[in-house]
Image 1 (cartoon, helix red, strand yellow):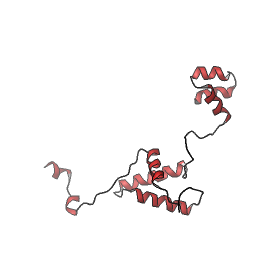
Image 2: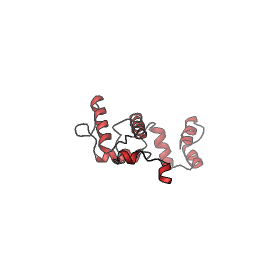
Image 3: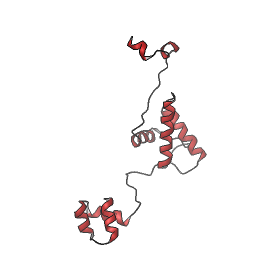
Image 4: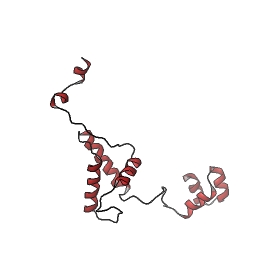
Length: 134
């Protein structure tokens, strides 16, 4: 689609010929040319920007690497605190995202998942791979 749009910008070919050449629908190509910057996804815009969500994902991963995995409540608390510090219009009650937002967030960022940490005793925590193999 992007190549077809670029070729249309040169103005050398007709819309119909470019659509046929790149095997894209003529109406879709026409819409993309008339509406540059139009959102590609369905549904409403996200509350956090793409950069803010990526920073949140990065924080979640770093915390998990350090042995502090975040659960659903911690992530929602963090987003609520962020929205209180950076006010903006949002559909959340008391700036706190709900279950639907959390599920959509996990779907948008499939490289993270919700996990539950398990408490272990000090005796269990000091077992090494060598001990298990023995």
